[in-house]
Image (cartoon, rainbow, N blue to C red):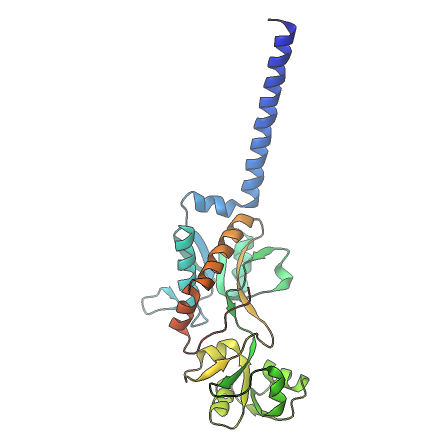
Length: 266
């Protein structure tokens, strides 16, 4: 073997070793960054943590199974990701910890976006808007929140809506005991509009409401995901975006909420 041939072979062997090392390093880094996604690709279930004590989002049915808007959303998410879904009931205070500790792949449980946790977890795009909204009867002429100063607004005493109305120095505020009473006062003509949280507006049993978007104060619900799960987060966001545009989200909301919910901002 000539010296030149020997040098070429040695160079080729070194390159192969180097490329193998790079490939192994890539695999190790990818596994470290998104172990949850790799598990799903191997056919394992998406483990969803939730606190089943907040109907209609999360509850336990007569058969002892978790049920609600979040459960249906999670199952639809699993269908779009082509993976089974399992549910892990956990008290609300322990939900984020379950993801951080690797005991769950996601929290889908009416979880409000908490900026304090952004160093420890990832958040999906919003999937439900639960913030402060203004509501009018279907035949109202009010179209902008600035017009609220021209009439009477009904609020729950001491609520965020009450505080917002006072901050805006609205001249005529009708204070009631509950959000439902505020909405009833609007419908029976004692107020021109009501300021309540979006969940109360969506759950109000009487028809004929218009919940105006955007919210006065946004408070979106999001899916909590592991910090080292960029690919899983991307896939979840893609699935949620598709649900918002193809009518799936509205159909799910209509199943659980008598009045139309405002879609979350994307």
